[in-house]
Length: 243
Image 1 (tube, rainbow, N blue to C red):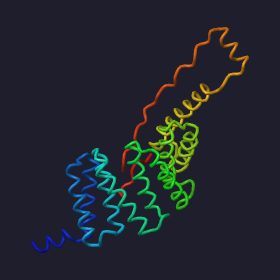
Image 2 (cartoon, rainbow, N blue to C red; image 1 turned 180 degrees about the vertical axis):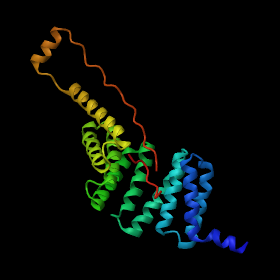
Image 3 (cartoon, one colour; image 1 turned 45 degrees about the vertical axis):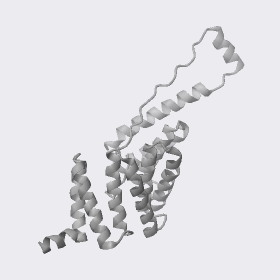
Image 4 (cartoon, rainbow, N blue to C red; image 1 turned 90 degrees about the vertical axis):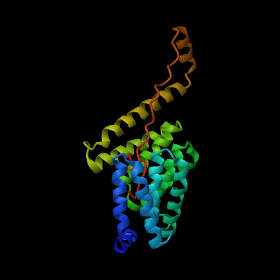
């Protein structure tokens, strides 16, 4: 019994517990996964203290699960604590900081705090570009996340080039047959179409065009078709809202 208890509290065992929790999570057995995630966190905190980077990883895993189970109020303080630990451990420009920023920004976007989410998405993008270069697949993920937010706030002209750049990076990195490419192409096409439609509606006609339009009884342009914004699903070191 003493040996079993010792193994249960060994920090090396926390990884095994966390792996089991992740397996349960991805197979949609989240109720079973949560206590294992929490057990892994308790082991790591007891072994290394509350400010260790591995604590941040486990906090992010629990927060992601809480967000998936519609408990954003419980998830947010865990994401914020993970970010604070990462910044303290690594400094402000580390890739793990970018991941934590991305996770928190995704939660803020999901809870309709878009003004708070945008600077975090932008900072995550800047860190990722600085860390890996402008053509890394993780940059494509950051671009997509920021573009989704810009589209949500009806800034289609700003969103379109980000979607296009993300698509180009993905095709260059993985090839045109990668599963994420068709969806990225559709999203880019929809935003480009809506952007053109919006520009057409906003264009002020010249006096000659206006008289000609009135003389033939031309109808007003119809409202553009609204496309649904599909939230990306979370993925360990849990990174939320990938492509």
